[in-house]
Amino acid sequence: MEIAEVMDSVGSAIDVVGVAVIVVGALVSSWIAYDTRRRTPGAPIYVAYRRNLGRSILLGLEFLVAADIIKTVAVTPTFSSVGVLAIIVLIRTFLSWSLQLEIDGRWPWQKPASEGSAGQETASSS
Image 1 (spheres, one colour):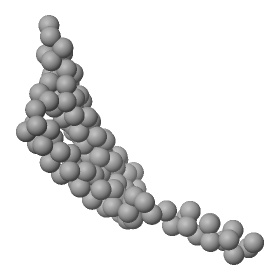
Image 2: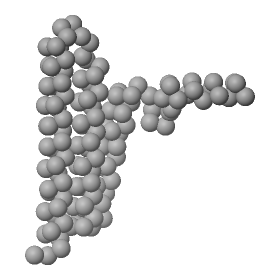
Image 3: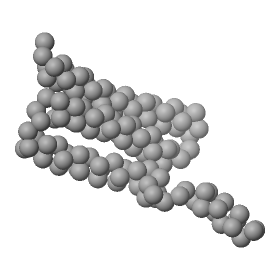
Image 4: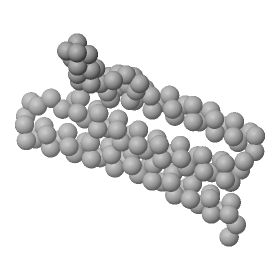
């Protein structure tokens, strides 16, 4: 077996893991939301459900990007395949950033509200 075949198999396996993470994450998020609603009728579940689902999608996207990188760089390192990889990574990065913004309600480079206010308190007390 050639190294290209091995890397293609590894990339395909990581693709499967990425899809499995998204599917299992969606099922677990749904189960948690259902169980919360069942135990506490009327409990607000939308925000927590959305965060859990978004986290599983983000993690799955990371695996899918890794698989694309492995398959492109190790299996078919042509200029056109690297260009396609760059477009795929850009699209998935945009999706990841959008999901992160939806989950946290802030840009990734911004401090959480609790950290920002704690930093202001120490600066003002000095």
